[in-house]
Image 1: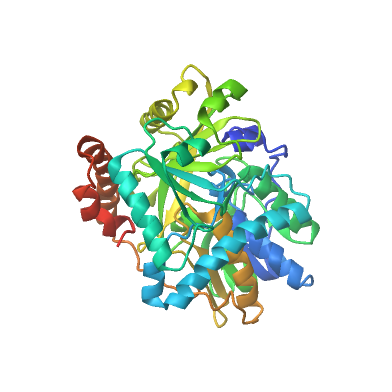
Image 2: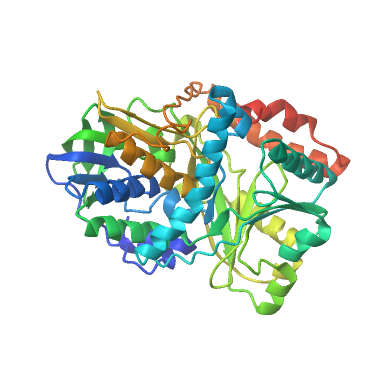
Length: 471
């Protein structure tokens, strides 16, 4: 893909204010202390904290495209404290105290991302406005109340999650049909591509080498097999990177590595962005503190107000591709983009008639049990982090700090967190996972329609909850 092609991926890529000219590819075998596969947030945060602790380490990052090509550069821009596995699920495999430690670490990580961006001079349009989740049906309102009651049972108070009445919710976000909602301050809206490109520049300035257009095909103990092709359709060159430690930081692209086809599935999330909206339009919508927002439906939607007053709005629902295939076509799905626009206008009628300037998408990584993990085996030298289920902007930072401590053999509060060493089961072989995942997506759509029609919680959603990470 050309430099202009990378800039055209999304609104974020186009407005990153950075050159997308690829860095040189790996040309020949190389030996380093740490080889990191993937130049997204996970890989870059890991390199950042390793170089901070050990400036002498020889670190190479191998990237199939360019830094920030994948989810790290094209996500919805939520830097949130959300962890994909619930407190109950985490506690069931560890303890109540461990689950609360995980939750606390995630909340602190939002501020750590902000701190590093400020310290390193990375202007990523960050605004810590929190997250407003509106309830727009009676069933959604009941779930909001249950969520807050559940948080209270874990000792989490108003400062962590507040229940809002209609007026309180509409004060932050005036979506149609709002009955109430919840608010947490533990989220910041960001420009994701500015953050990932800034991180890449910082780690390079510390001596890390980033090899772009260098595709890893297999990860093995203490080595990575890579290929590169500088000219389309030209013969592919193969090289070997030897390292004491190899970090897999590939998230949704993990199935492209030999032997890891069922480790994580790539599921698409699609996004649209409007032109900059006027103050008059924003006065009818809200988000004065640039809160991120969602509502209580089952098939996830998400949005934010950008620094230049656009409305960025995304959601799930695009079908999963058989065999975990990932292509450039994954960034588009006309039906899903149309559905997103219709939903956006239904929620905010003032947006009608305003131009949608950008449409894009990409893949996120989902493990079989919807539980993120981080780990390191000092014998094989293999480390990994991932399975963020779309909540990776902050979680990757926690992963980078945790991998630093694991790799350097420095036990800490981070290495004691319950996601360390967690092993998710593998996904079913095809066609079972194609049938199951797409059935789950369709079921969530049906569940939302059922709740809109009946005003009661969906029986369909309850039935398929185990498939989509529920209890």
